Image (cartoon, rainbow, N blue to C red; front, side):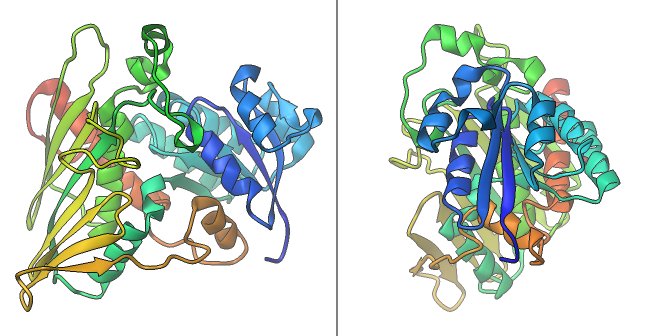
Length: 357
């Protein structure tokens, strides 16, 4: 690369901050210049894992930005605060990557886009599943026309629950007190499986379809006793060419990165000339075509830099590479947010709604 990129991580609400800092730490052209959170204890593992010196640790985001002068800021706040933190950091004129989902609402997403547009800097929204070789391979096969025109997608996404793992997917068993205190279970801060996971299916599904939008959305979500948020939702999107389904679940029998639950987490794609089953972390895809209706396995592609993780990709784009019209791009991620907003409205009003604009 033409330069060494200075990177800061701000707000540790989401455990994925640890994964993103590890990718930063391992990148030869990245320098982790600062981390910041109002609760110092939440930074303890990162401080230890990456040998971060005391002078690079902050509890005041302004001090962090002023003193470290980063090229890129990684943000991992609670979903309901994505717009707030993007606007705060945008004042400093830096590139921003926000961990999924895009936002708690379309209005918040648009505020984030506007804040960064005013600075002329990048806004990227990271979806960790985008980097799985199975989905990279799936997109290639779709672009090559293997199954013809995509007519529908079915996504099932989730895990045992957001508190059953930490950074680097370390397993944990949450206490009742932790669950009660977590923003994941706070409706006002963007909690619930619908906001946490529907964006995966909506955004990556939109990428697979080349940016196509649905006409209508219908969503039903559960109402668990004693909780203020859902743990299970089913969304049906009606497109001009057919129906697609997005299902979210906190409470799968196993975590898909360890053992795939039933039903398996991932995508099933149907086209005019065939189908593809692509499940999370799979090393093979299952394909049917008109020429081979009995089906066959396709090994996933070997993925090379800069498509192995979001840090590689964003830094390559900042260094003059392409910022493709994919899941990280606000144009595609905004369509995903439109679908999620429509699902939220549908579930609340218990009716089918037009796509929220």
